[in-house]
Amino acid sequence: MEKHIVKVLKTEFVTHNVKRFTLEKPAGYNFISGQATDVAINKPGLENELRPFTFTCLNGDDHLEFTIKIYKGHNGITEKLGDINAGDELIIHEVFGAINYKGPGLFIAGGAGLTPFISIFRQLRVKNELAGNTLLFANRTEKDIIIKDELDKMLGENHIDILSDPQLPGKKGKHIDKQLLEQFLPKKTGYCYICGPDEFVAATKNNLIDLGVLEDQIVVEE
Image (cartoon, rainbow, N blue to C red; front, top):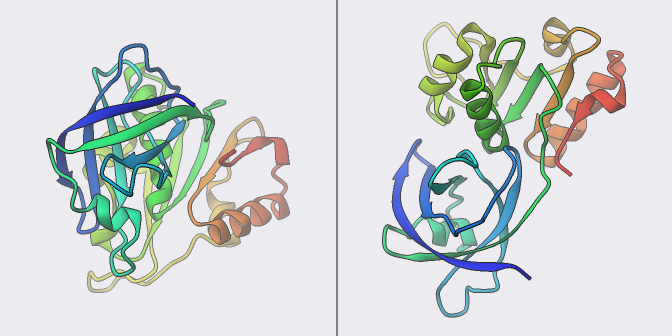
């Protein structure tokens, strides 16, 4: 099994509970935007505690980047990652398929499910191919939105935040339901990309199929 010990170069919180990790990149280590790898912490007793995370950098970058939601309160691996800082080491493994970009369409993300789309959008920006793509991004409140400013810059009005419990006055809570999806369905040739919690993905996929989207036009994590 491919394995690389890499030094953490930098860490920073991008929201109150989402942390960005910038790491050394091993020579010859390559991936496609949307792909992931298993990550472990290089500390005694944690080396074999592998968790899958998606790359949020580009393959052409001279470093690796992960953007990870930190879940506190149950002493899990992400909580331990919350304590990792520059100078610490992580262990990364071989790359595996997650979500591959097939063409323009509708991206539907729930919370940290945004992560595979970050690298895909950044790659499309480099290639000047963002046109025709729309993002529906579901979160609880405004403070949960990951990289909001960058998404606004990349997608403009095609970045649509759907908040279940907005804190700004006069805003009503919304969910990504069948009615909302119908408003944003891509043309018949477009794809629908879904990533988020399992229940969110399953419900969204069923709603898309009910709306007439063909199953081979729906892209989910593999």
